[in-house]
Image (cartoon, rainbow, N blue to C red; front, side, top):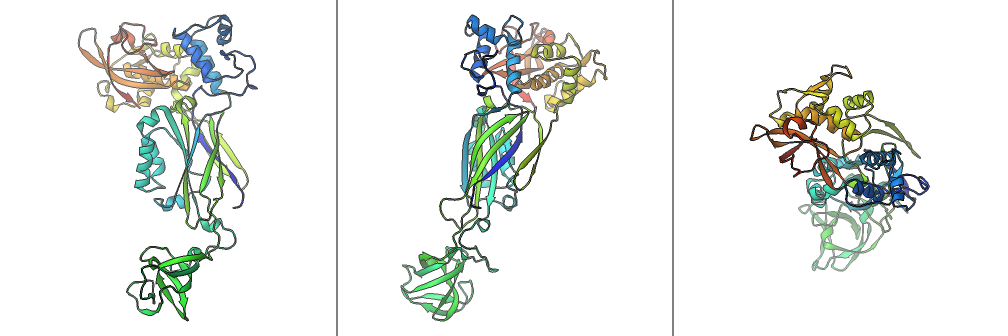
Length: 484
């Protein structure tokens, strides 16, 4: 391959509303609160900071911040700005990294189609799963140290492993391999090594113990046509004084090369990471090596994307990629991971976080005991949410049933579909009758702050339950763990 080739890796994800947009997309429209001509994460930060009372905004900024034109700047405008950004094509900020290696790769990597294998990982466990089929345990562990739990708190990682067989990328000749395993990449003019003082044996076979057919005197020059390495135990094909056999490559010194010029493709450069209509496309370019290499090159292309540019939730899209010789055709099928929550939101026209909260609160849900209430280990987010959604038996106006975990899970799924970084939490809270009891609620991480949303607030806290923070007077608790 003599020219660079464009690679499109198509991944799936729901994205965070914090990237820079071209000025041509928005020209003096609502949302450009800082007036720099583009919608950026800075605009969202200003709006959220104002809502939280961290700073004031000018009258002109207030006009731009009132996205829903209701003459008030509030949490609804934050939601509107976030959704506006989510619906807009954009280029994400990222850092491109490429590692090249010639060991620690598996046969699975050699068989990997160049257009396949790209994926996005959001945890060390996902990274291990993504790399293990293609690299040795040692190589995988090195990447787990590089991209550890601390890394995934702030970033996600797009990875693309690729293997390049030098036999497919050659110039001025062809790399030839014999049935014995030797190839002509080691061909050249040689002399005996510095430790040879009496003569170098020409062996009958590729073996230390095979018979000696003759010797090459110290300092003599000779041609090696094929070999399978240069270590002690690797043998090269040689003919000297009409004697043909094999010499130990550990005891020779190469003077010049007659090997075919073999160019592998040892590098992939990530050019861009773009979001459009629920699809993340990573465009990368593969390059020929700038110097001659004779081994099979493997590379791992990586793109580090800040979490502020990539919303790490389960609200993802399913993407199928079909590749032809000249173009990459992407067929995208959008599938919702929370179909019952999506249906409920459409039935009740739920478009804001507050609407979702009150639909899942005890005003609209009858609290009942559920058999796994005291054992959160048996819970999953979808199991708890489905219990509540299904309890209406298809009647959109019926009151749902469920315990605190069910209420929180239904709200958590809705919040995710609205674009929030929501998490179902299992913990303990003080009871009105005294002591502590198990309880489930939702955390939403927004602009670096963790907020508590408790749809079952009337049972334990007596507060209003909406957008509390840990340490709030009505919210003393002991956090335990997240329910996936």
